[in-house]
Amino acid sequence: MFRQATRLLSRPYFSARARPFSTDLTSAPAVDSSFVETWSKVIPNIDPPKTPLAFMKPRPPTPSTMPSKLTVNFVLPYASELSAKEVDMVIIPATTGQMGVLPGHVSTIAELKPGLLSVHEGNDVTKYFVSSGFAFIHANSYADIIAVEAVPLDKIDPSLVQKGLAEFNQKLSSASTDLEKAEAQIGVEVHSALNAALTG
Image (cartoon, rainbow, N blue to C red; front, side, top):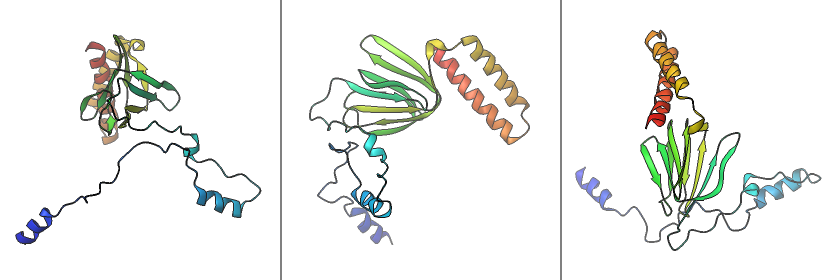
């Protein structure tokens, strides 16, 4: 049994020809020709619907030299906070901890937790409190940050945060069902993160 394990572990897992890994879109808009052809056969008198690729702009290729700026897209379900904004650095509240993203960062997908997202542009720092979401860091120095909810930090009232934290702590201590405990725990975590963002 151990001989087989040693033989299996010594086998190379990757072939000599590496598969290209990229988060780039093609330079020309991709059209699903088989879909369009099938659509034309079934419903010839109506134009085929557009797929999501039809609405996406192609990204520039991965640069061969280190870019000086990071291009950030920061979107919410109802608004776009930043669109193709060139910045020096973004610090995101990932579930694994605070993550600084600079130009040339390795491709990464990170889940966001309630916390402080800061966008650094020269000496200016714009801070947002995000509830949750995902950050997609691409190899071509683009970062797409998608948050469920985000509020500029200067628009948050510290007294309301303290009041909410006290209310959810009280609800947590008096919760009788698992659902009530879970809801109260989420409220405590979010208000604690808000409080830390305001005081830190």
